[in-house]
Length: 307
Ligand code: NCD
Image (tube, rainbow, N blue to C red; front, side, top):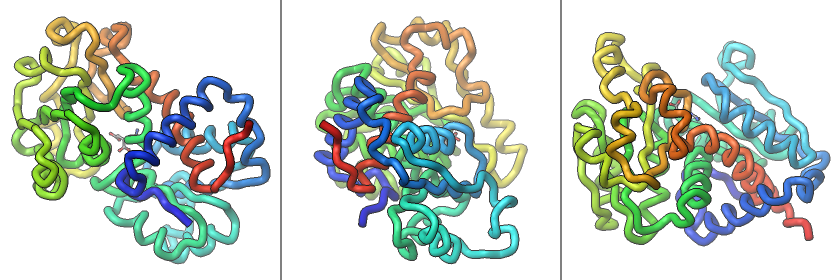
């Protein structure tokens, strides 16, 4: 039995196969409409979500399966004090696969250790968010035609942004990736990512504060929101929140084929005028997310690709 807790749980080859499957699903979704008939996914969301939960649910429904779950800890027995370990044992009796989001780092790992069904980490605190990363990889590969030899700018809250951590893990395995890490000094990428991933692999990266200075050199710009819920005080959040605003003026400085990604939700870090720019990829990204989650559910359930 396999889980998806960190993007590194799949080798580069397996990741590429999963993206190939997602691409095939995208080209002919009807072919996959019944491959998960009678299968159930449980979505266990202890933290707010719009895209991720509904994307998992849509993915399973598109495959012919069905959905159970909860969308807040208040509506589950967590509010009575039940542990994640006990909840996943119970859910293992009901569903074939589970996607879990939790505010605590490591919660999905704990769940997987007690689960008898595959567990997908749908975000654990400020740690990892592997299925957002699969979505990001699918978006980049589809729009740019490759995942190697490019300069990727990550901008905003690189400290608490779990999507950033997972994306760095995943992209670091492709040839010729260079990162430009754009953040205020207080929100830099945590040291453990530099020490465990970037430095040992000899990945080229630089840390900068100004987006204007580096935007012309980027092939992909990954914007993120400041993660208010992970700040210890509101004052710090308010100071950081307006730090980066991507607008039409900044987009003029960028390459003609520099795509802008964002895991969403957006707060104020991209102005709505950018939405009409053909390089804005963040709403397309949402659609790609459904296809990769369909591919992931099939892969973890061991469902064969239909002929
Ligand atoms: C992200 C998350 O939950 O980490 N959202 C998402 O799943 N698309 C990013 C965020 O909340 O800022």
